[in-house]
Image 1 (cartoon, one colour):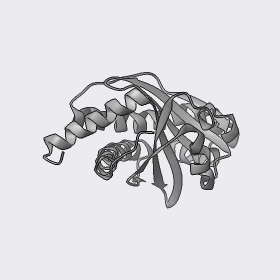
Image 2 (cartoon, rainbow, N blue to C red; image 1 turned 180 degrees about the vertical axis):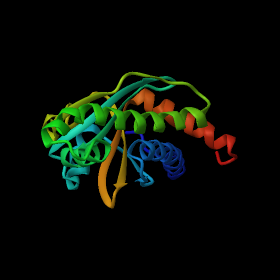
Image 3 (cartoon, rainbow, N blue to C red; image 1 turned 90 degrees about the vertical axis):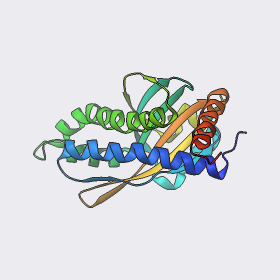
Amino acid sequence: MIELSEMQRDALGELFNIGVGRAANSLSMIVREEVELSAPSVSLVHPKDVASTLLGSDLRELSMVTIDFAGPFDAQTILLFPERNALAIVSHMLDPDMTPEEMSEFEQEAMCEVGNIILNACISSLADEFQVEFEGGLPEHHFSDSDGLPLFGEDRGQVILLLQIQLGMRQERMQGHLLFLLSVSSMQALLDCVDQYLERLGMG
């Protein structure tokens, strides 16, 4: 399996942190108060190991947003929150006088907006620093449980770049996960971009 060198991991962490910072600013404007997104921890995991990697994260009922990106490397990107965390995020975005029923009706739309902001910000930070372009699809929202996710057990010749983040809003902290599903060839293309980026910085 492909592995990240310490320098590649640090570079990806810094690049994704730029994107996460942009996303936090955009989300802060939507909810009209400060939103904090922690610097993401980056790891590379095999699809069948994702469930065990995230087991301590209260991942049973899930709220997830997916966007497919195509470019120098192709990736299916996923923003994943335990559903109760997703509802907490949505409650801060919508009218506080809404009933729980009304809130759940808007949950998918609101989470698509959150996913669109965070996932696009992360990909655009890569595009800017790698000096490349990506095309992104529309965000799609899904409810699932950890057993129902096909990526949590199938080996389809993919590797998963896993980013774990903390989202802070109104003194609440919520654990979220960004997953980038890449074929082995796309993962290699991503690492080639990272290596070229490091060379431009004189660190290659």
